[in-house]
Amino acid sequence: MTERELLELAREQEQEHALILLDVNGVVVSWFPGAVRTLGYSAQEMTGSTLERIFTPEDLERGDLDWELRAARAYGKGEDDRWQVRKDGVRIWVSGTMTGLRDETGAIVGFVKILRDRTDLRAHIETLQSRVQYSADTENQKHLALGTLAHELRNPLGPLTNAARVIRAVAADRPEIASCVQIIERQLRFIEKFVQDLLEATRVGVGKVKLHCEELDVRTVIDNAVETCSAVLTERGQTVDILIPGTSLRVEADAVRLQQVIVNLITNSSKFSPVGSRIWIKVTVDADELVLRVEDKGRGIPPELLPRIFNLFTQAGSDGDRPGQGLGLGLGLVKAIVEMHGGTVQARSEGDGKGAEIIVRLPLRQSGTVETPPRSET
Image 1 (cartoon, rainbow, N blue to C red):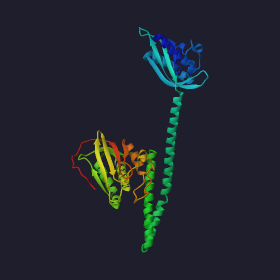
Image 2 (image 1 turned 90 degrees about the horizontal axis):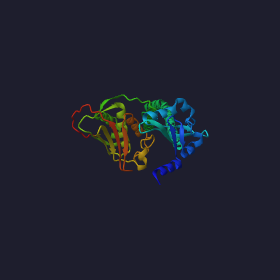
Image 3 (image 1 turned 135 degrees about the vertical axis):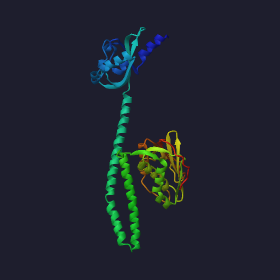
Image 4 (image 1 turned 30 degrees about the vertical axis):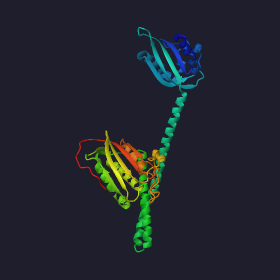
């Protein structure tokens, strides 16, 4: 069978793609079976007419049919994805091209339009878009609900704290009452910290946090973060080793927020590590990124939890001597703040009991270096 005969069979038997030949004025001269199947019009109905009847009224009003022909005439091809209309009035989503056909002199002698019904793909895309929008709406509603909850919890904290102070002052000579007051005050501090974290997570989640960036030396931010955590570390008998290059590493960041990231990572490692254990903060440079790692040899993260460890309220479970502390807000805040700085955060762990490593990557700003000796601190 010759090439011409095979081509003729292909044109007659191809059903998925509508093939339409037009003359130089955009009038249909051939309407092949694929077009009949896709658009419902017979060859007799379409031959000798333009393609206006398959275009939607709004597209015709915009001049989209003329645009396709002009584009094919000027640039060789016009292509677009659009709604088009079948004979029965049903709109279908098609992906197609309009190609200009030229003779040996380069003059336009006609056009070929090829299109394919992709309504199924369009429906799938719209379904995915609806799911994304639903997820975004749900997330916003969640943050609003959490914000309301945090405010409602914060309101009674002041009176409760004042009442505890009064009881302590009145019962100074009553050891049995003083011990109860200590319990109340300790639990109030826990609730206050939770409310603060919840408010912060809500503000970040709804985009109410604005960064005030400046050029910072990472060493200074780490020092301040470790100092902030000193009480917790001392209580747990834990030490922090800081391993950092001997040059000044600078980033463009919000000092308060970056310190908040490091404080959350240190306290998280402390919480999930045994008493007397060691935590490492390691800083390196990878190409144009600063890489900050906070590593511990504590409880670790189960493999099934790694993909969602940075979600709010996700927690792996604390060390045995400090069960159930916290509600999993810290790492969610870390992720949000790091991403606001244009960075990324990643968690690594070999599993339960094998420690964890949180890796923060931030764009590095090199504006001169100052030679200082490397160090390891506790």
